[in-house]
Length: 187
Length: 233
Image (cartoon, rainbow over all chains, first blue to last red; front, top):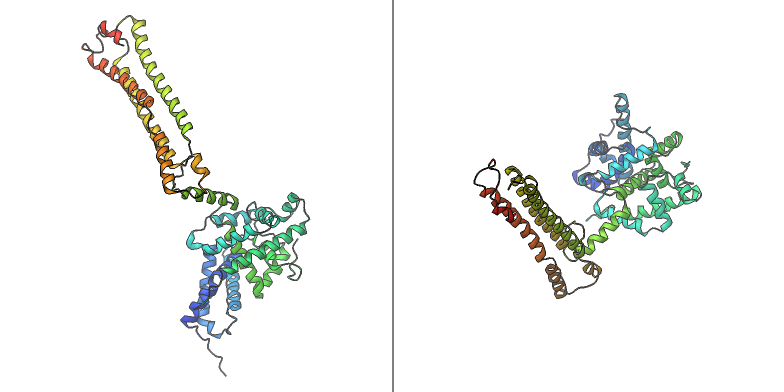
């Protein structure tokens, strides 16, 4: 008995997959590799795999499939780079320097490189403004001043758990704002 | 610090700490094993990346941005687009007065130099001809600078709303009222007579120096101008 050859994905479905998932997939991969060009490269490799193997994916599970493939591609690239002694992904960097790098990269993003549409940026910022003051304080200290949770707790004279809870609630609200502009409806 | 157990900790917070490298080695490994197969963890990481980008892209801080947006809105109602600093007419007048005083002092200084030269040397003209030309240049330069500075100040003032206009910028203002207000402000900013007089005085002084220089018939080594022209200096 011969195995079934992988079924290719038709162009229409590929286009839909890309429209639905590329943006979030890129964000996810960026979270793993912390490099925009590499994230782009990995996402392209993922969709290249989708063209050749995507036909086998059960309908409705393409999102999980894409994220898993992308993660493996990221790990593969990482290992390849380690073997070649390229120190592009510096995961061992100190917390502060990594945070600073992330912020500075974000500040220098060209419009075409952005992961988010402008509408989503506006939506999230409005959501930040609408948060309760105590949550806003934590987010601002965390994101804009790049303080650790312990530093924030000391500064606000609060238990660490309270600060974490406020951050958690704030992230949930901001995520909802993000979702409101995510996944545009299909015709 | 943060447990990687999704039941006790929100994945979003965990992903946020992962993104900012605030997980210990063990926590990181656990979270990465989640990332390999758990769609929720993968989604959470994507979410925190997008949230981080939304809050930090193209701006240093949200509060500052909000302030700028508010300011721009009130200015745009009147069609002001210049980024020039706001200057009110009183400040402009003060600056103009200062410039005029400096200008007149400069002219007086030129006159004083010329007179002192005559008196101290006992000859009609002791200032060398090239110094005359230099003084002439300086005088012209002063006048030119005055006009340039005035023009710039006027331009800045025209771009900037007055205090009164700013105060009502958030209210509905009729076109006629605004036109009247703008005309009034424009008339306040016309070059005053004393400014023209100061510039004219400077030019007149420069002309005299130039005339003196041109009318010396004997050249630089002649010993100076005739006695009767000393009075005019």
